[in-house]
Image (cartoon, rainbow, N blue to C red; front, side, top):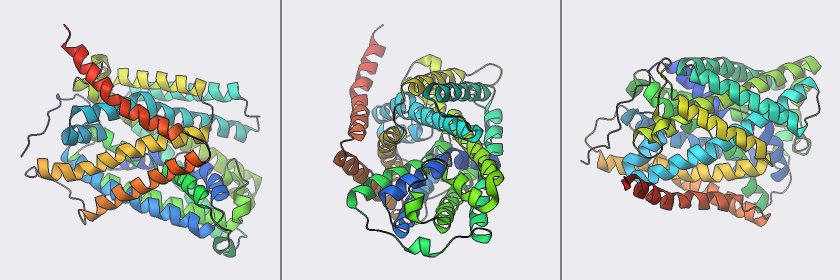
Length: 449
């Protein structure tokens, strides 16, 4: 057996329980995607059954990945999550590449996109035209306030997620139940549709995957979960089942109320349109408020969980040591939080196109997740004798389904985007590969007195 790579003893407090952890995985994953992406998908794939097939397929793939991560999280319950898995399985270089992408590319992009959506939806609720500078000011204010809340402690950040997650779950449940119990829709909307083009189908995959993205982040707070060897598996599995059920239910509700062609024209806040049809303008405004709360909660969850990667890297000597500092009073990785927030603000100021950025983000993030879930195969050999509180069911088929399904999905996204002249996924993958020479340079600089 190869002994595990030891991380320095961390001093983050274990204060997150089952409900808090489940709220985080649901809160991080369910953000603005389920409220903003369905019209985009409907325009690309004008067939309701194919749309529902995409949501179901990638929900199943995500659950398979989450089951593998549940094993890895209970085996290695340390701050950093995926970073820790990659370091144990493949070594410092792979972990460094994942970490620097998370710190400087994918996390700031995700936070920036969520904060901009928050600003747009807030102005929509208030009936104010969504001017660029106004949206940016609201986005920056949201990042600053939530960064400060998470500096105050993981318990504060988790509490915010618990409240906002309850709101978004109830909102989605209200949309689903309201549509079928009170709405004047038609089941024929779900069975009637047009011809699907391969290019549109490939590009729609990016929107579905973006909406499912986020479940992996809960592994990054494993070092702050109470009794992680017992709770992490329950948190991840319960959270994923809730997410998939709500996503498929919401899409069924949208399609029941309106034909796919009408759905494709709802560019902003489709949930508000549906609830207005069910309960009038007051119901639409109320669900819009819930949507804003949902996005706010996802933004908070990203700022809570993902800076733990920079923290773990610093503790392992793979990045600047100050990122591994914890606050003397609140025991939070305050330096990593502030840096992550600052880079996200810069991204807000240069953000140009939401769909292009999310596509770029998804390809890089999920390419890394292929190797993260693949670590379960490597560590079954390298750490064969280490006790595992949870083992992936139906191993090796469950993680293999995630790996091959994600390879197919990411390849389809890249092909589809190239067809329309968008090369941002290629640029993102190139930045990922550039991390290896950067790691080599980092090691050389560390050897210089």
